[in-house]
Length: 248
Image (tube, rainbow, N blue to C red; front, side):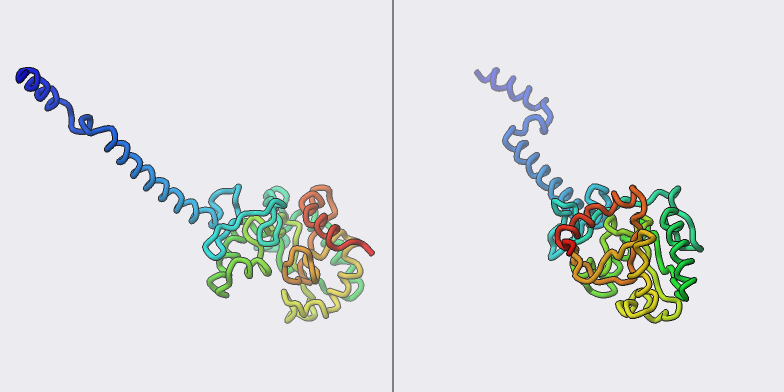
């Protein structure tokens, strides 16, 4: 019997320590490592999503520490998702400002008509890349100390801005520049002219007073809907408006 025990001892000594560890200890050790790795990955996911690292969840953000994801309608904080315009579809109006080529054609005709009526329409902004929109949206947090839902009333999350399509533009009145990007723009001759004639050139006010998306009123923000592609882009928003704002 002693020889058998001695032989077992010799065999055991030759087996590496890692393989002599009991299965239960190995399982517990593996579970701890798995749990730690899972927590690390979860933490990385929570950080990465609001920064827009994953296109599927682009525009997701944090509100009171909770991840905000799009609704069943696809909206995030009141805004609909939009595709970014292809560089081939953009045209430069002047350095630093681009718009969709279809928007440009319609805007050119509309500005000519406005000029003939003594109105000086100023193009203030157009296409914004999703990356630029990310800088604007998250930069506004530090400058205004606003939570996401407050910022979204005046600025769309990245991936949810009409400006990324190239079809949305901000307009001003050349004779009243102090009203640029201000609600007071509604009192200008330019805005009154737009309300009367913009539809003729297929431009629509995106965020009128009391809009169903609950975005702040922006009399300067107009979007072009004069092509099938543009209509498809804005159909979800128009459908919502038709449901909540029925025609008289």
